[in-house]
Structures are given as structure tokens and as C-alpha cells.
Amino acid sequence: LYGAEQSYFLVNGSTAGILAAVSACTERRGRILMARNCHKAAYHAVYLRELTARYLYPALDETLGLAGGISPEDTERELQRDPEIQAVLITSPTYDGLVSPVEKIAQVCHRHGVPLIVDEAHGAHFPFGGEAGFPVSALDMGGDVVIQSLHKTLPSFTQTAILHMKEKYLGRERIDRIRWFLSIYQSSSPSYLFLAAAEQCIRYMDGEGR
Image (cartoon, rainbow, N blue to C red; front, side, top):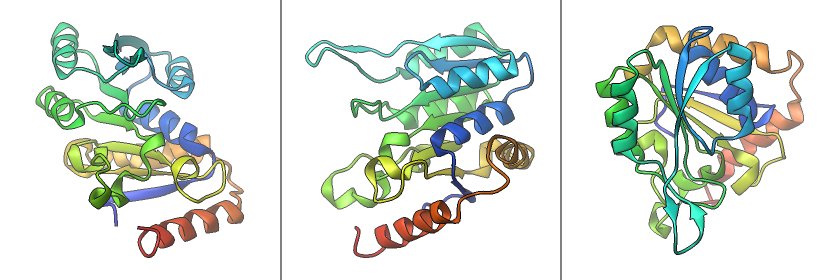
């Protein structure tokens, strides 16, 4: 449905997906380039993995008075400045609904050989609204790991989310590591109410929910 190589239901929200993705795509005490307006789960991952974080600052949308998107040019500059960076993490859309040029950012990341993780928690509806003019999902624009909160913009229980992966730039080893870290950050006794709700939500959105 999503065009991912693998997708995993999350029963601990996008938080678990962010923790697993960051942990799997970096080495302990490694380096990550992340948007300064990331969710607190990203900072928790930095803490748990003892990472050094470099920051991408979102542009200011002066008309709205809100933090806007991340610049591909800023991403390029920071990756050139620090070749030890192991992964890039951005939030798109932001909590205010503003979208970054994910496709161009992904191209920059892949030229430097690092995976792009996209916190698309507030964009779980993107894949289902092309005819309505919704933005294109980060998964279709080069995101290697894309995490969506089903409960934020789709009909599912709070705490349900989904993590998508594409293998081309991520690689089999990182995919296996993400799966392993998901088993660490999530309960070994998942709620079947949550799992059933997530599955029903996706079935609905692939049918009349569109």
C-alpha cells in the first residue's frame, strides 16, 4: 500500500519509531544531524545513544510567525562540514503543518551516503489525499525511514503508529537493526486492541476512507 519494503505497526506511538530509527542508524557516541524542532523523542535517542548532535534550524515563516521547513542547502553545508555524521533526521510536516522539500534533502543525504529519517507523525494522511491536494509522503520522495502517527490524522487509537523502511540506501543491516531496536523500545506484550485498530485503520483508508 505504501510502497515500503517493510512496515511495522507501533504500539508505543511514533516515539518508539524515532528511538529505534535513530539508534539503528547511528553508532554509540556517533554523530547525527537533526532539525532543531524535532520531537523530544529524538533528544531522548541522542541521550540514550550518547550521540553528538548537530542542528538544522528551520526557516522562519515571517507571514505566519511560525518555524518553517528545513533547507537542502543547509543540509548540504552541514554534511560537508562534518563527514562523521551518520544519519539525518527532520520533522515534516511540522506540528503546524509546514512541509520541508524532502526530495531535495534526501538527494543531498544520499550523495553523502547517509540515511534520511523523517518524522512524518502529523502526515499519516498524506498517502491517501493526492486528489485532494495533500502533500506527497516523504516515503515517495526518498525518505529511508518514515514514521507516521496513525492516531493523529487518521481514525485509530492514541498510541498507534507505523514505521516504513526502504532498503535502497538504508541497507539490509540497518533494517535488521531497526527491527531489533523496536523489540527493545516496545513492549513484548503489545496491545492487540492497538494492533487491530491500526490494521483496521489502514484497511479503511485503502477503501472508503480515501
